[in-house]
Length: 284
Length: 286
Image 1 (tube, each protein chain N blue to C red):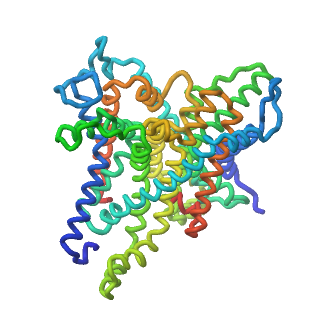
Image 2: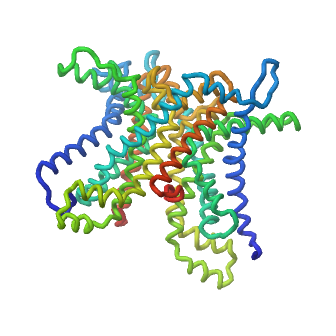
Image 3: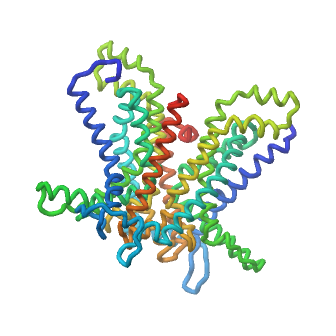
């Protein structure tokens, strides 16, 4: 092995410190803490109690399953809602408008989740803008209850995450040569066939990276479920948060955190396997 | 279907209608927030009671405007400071990591790279709580064994910076790496054969080439920090960042001053986006 220059270590050491101190050790700590349990006489022992709590108490694992299913659902919804937009911006509308319309998509991303969730709260509540408007024009007599439901939570989650999917899909679509579509069309393929046989296979990498980003944002989100969701729409992150900052049971909180990490990594792993992609590609 | 192919009128009309709906969906919450920031009312709701700048400048018993609200201004200031330090540290370490992974060969490079981009698939909540656990443990350790109390390791301003940096560096790494992939290595080789040291090459040739990406990454890291709440909420001490403060107010005591703050954020982001857009158009890039 050749001798390393000083520069190599100058690059290596900060990176090792970053990853070691802020990623590896904290997560090992979390796993370790998740197996600690405080007995009645204030003694810390090794135990599986924190995980048993999770499985024994229905509310925990029900929330866990619900969070997982909703996150997958919202990710799918985000794809359905944004794919036509990504296609429109790259393949249909004129170049002149497309760059401006793309810019508009980026603005809500940078404004941040909290402000946009707050906006939805004002829109959706009983005396909110949508209800007031509908009552004024006489479509409804009584306000429709929209805030603090699964519906409002889904809207919030969708809104804050879907735009992250458009960008990777657009870059995949951008590199799709128009002549492929033209050729298929000349040979008599229907729109649906072109979509299924050419466009979707070609853009799969973009869809997968976008989907993973959206999924991670949704499953790890705290603000939208907490502000827009009601009592019935608990999110698993809320329970982790409660363990840490309300009931101060950090050991159980660590166990719950580890379960969430396992869940999200597991689903991402399955998605990568099913689509034949690599995580390294998602980043780029 | 695409620009070069003709398609039926109905298809185009339906498609265009959908796109219009999508943009309405996108803009509706932002417009609502902004309009209601100027409503002359103590409630964050319609009806419209006339134009007023009270929620920006008033200082009465009933209405405390944004610029008179000391707590709120303080949290804006905290967020700006946090964003600056997070962006600074993330940019430095992220760029170093990009140079390491793109230009050096070493054992376990694959696993290390995987670790470096893992914050993309770690929920922010988990990142926050695990750093909280570790720092608290380390703090206890130092206190028990050396009798010193390290402020840094308790929920505080700097712990928030550390927490946000832990994933900010990943985004910088990705952005800078993307640019580094387009770099012509022969430039470095030429400099090396002219007896520049490796460090000189990086500083005088590679980094100037990377400058646009580094500046862009700095901005991205700042914005990530400025809007983050999932990680921050576990690490925040007595000085809340703006999102944490806003969150508490939305939950417990909302007045239209929230709209005023949001309006400022929306206006600022839109302005920055437009300036960036015009600049890009001028430079002929898209």
